[in-house]
Length: 172
Image (cartoon, rainbow, N blue to C red):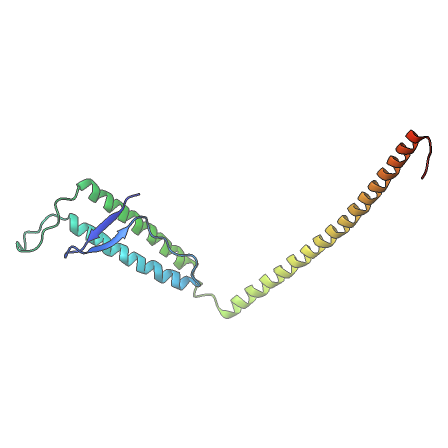
């Protein structure tokens, strides 16, 4: 796992990135998730600009300004750029998915109410099917218990007959 520390113009660290950030799915609503994803994307873009700034060649406009650090390995800088490109693309896909999951403008209160009624009806039908299945299971359990009781009684009778035949006295 690669750890990157990017610096701004004054040499202060921007952010420590150890793995691509993930959008929390434990939040209460999709708008909050979307806001967090947009904030994360802004942070990713800011940090990627810092990465590009640090790897840019010196500019000839102002000779007095600080030049980017030349001690960075070009392969490391390319890896930083790839990682940021991947993180930004993944976050953009997450943002698109969150936007698609939001209710459409066509969704009205009447449509939502009708949808809820249909879902409630389906839930009641499923509950009735479940109750019928439970009732059948209870009946089968009673039949199995009766059959096991008969089997146990029969085995006890057979054991008594077997013991009695060995003792030449039959007692039932």
